[in-house]
Amino acid sequence: MARFLVHGLTVETASTLGWDPGAELLAGFPGAPVRSAAADLVIQVTAGRVEAPDPSLPADVILLQASVRAVLAATEVRVEAPGFLARVPLAGGLVEAVVYDGADRHELVHVQLFPALAAALRLRGWYHLHAACTVAPDGAPLLIVGHGGSGKTTLCSALVAAGHRYLGDDVLFLEGATSRLLAFARPFHLGPEAAGALSATAPHLGERYGAGPKRALDAAAAWPGRAEWSASVPGALLFPRVAAGAPATSVEPMPVVEAAAALIESSAFAAARLPGHRAHLAALAALADSAPACRVALGADLLADAADTVQRLLAAL
Image 1 (cartoon, rainbow, N blue to C red):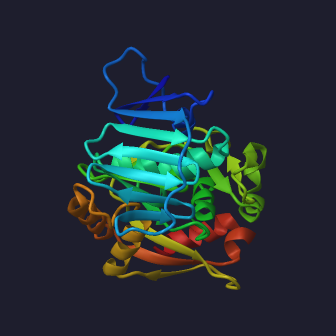
Image 2: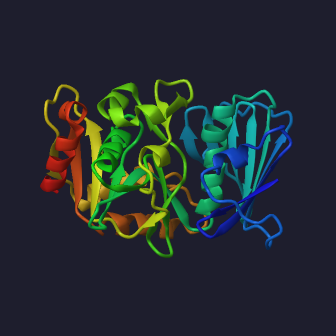
């Protein structure tokens, strides 16, 4: 059994697998005393036989991502994948997963168990964002929103290399009650081109992340003392995309309504009628309205001269 402090929540993890997937998922957070008060959330993973999910798509599917789907039932959210089933009661406080003991470790932790944790945090009013965040030297946060392949990790890493602090490169949570952005502590994941452009990160690159070409980057070692646990309302919202063939990075204003739609698309369970779904949508709309939003078309210059490109980008905001 292990305990972690996750932004004030005590999360307890346990497993019968011989290793603890919940503890691996939360390894970037500080530990909590084992004999402290009762945990706010328990993640229990046990080995067992899991029936294959029904291949049909019932109307109550609230998340569909590769081989993983989440289904809303009367009293719980079920996260299903081949060899994996997690139950998250709507009453909160528990993630109970059963998994085939031979499951791929990376797949289990980051692809299957993480959505179950996100569902449990969603029931507490913490809203997932597929986004990065940096904090400029003047204290202004920049929220960088986009799906995989949009270039947000490259842009985030280039900003940090230029002197920004960081919350993370891919996953954040928006605390509905305070509108704070909360870091989800984990390594950065850089593709080979980004790693080549940011050569100072090379000594801190680790193993490949999953089956793709990206490698884990120990951000704390690459940029010591730059991590932030939370940030206030951002000074700007950036929505990057890789502009294939474009020589130079460009910036253009983005209407609030489009920014709100993109935030909804980036937030797991935003469209689901879970308890508090109206508050979820309202929080994302308020975030979209809190700061100027920009589309950022990332050109070849970001890889050729990252430092100069981010300075020109910041000047254009």
